[in-house]
Length: 229
Image (cartoon, rainbow, N blue to C red; front, top):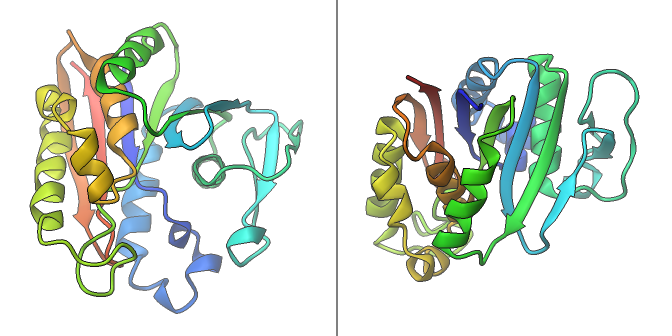
């Protein structure tokens, strides 16, 4: 049974070597992420969204070379990891966080970014038999402010305020209600993994704490820790 869950964003700027001059600006976010994942125990399962559904096993290794610096990561800390080609960004971030936290291993499941809310809920329900800490990776809207990656949208701040409130209170109904069409319009990367989390958490009592929320580079980032009550 999964009893501990952490939600984090997945920007490459979490890695200091990739942040360059923005490292001080992202320091608070980075520390919140590291503080959160240290609660997950030794074995993790990470869930994220992507264009191709796949599983990245813990016996994998990769590098952030494609993002500007050859920072190498492994998904297991026993020295048995082998190169697995170009890892998707969520797997790289999960591996980097694992290494920083000193956890044993992390398996990564990439779910189709177009998965329906019902399918996400079903996937989440099937995860609850795992005896691991759950790492949920996903960004909010990328349309905060005139310099945002997705161009400014006045709906973005209200959307991410609602997501932060839901993650900070373990509000499963609010997460289930996230509209795929609106999320696509706002450039939201976290809708699918958040709805997988809602499926997993259904029927149980959870204590939740929001450690960070903000949009330092025009993208909504949220860090929360959930513990089964």
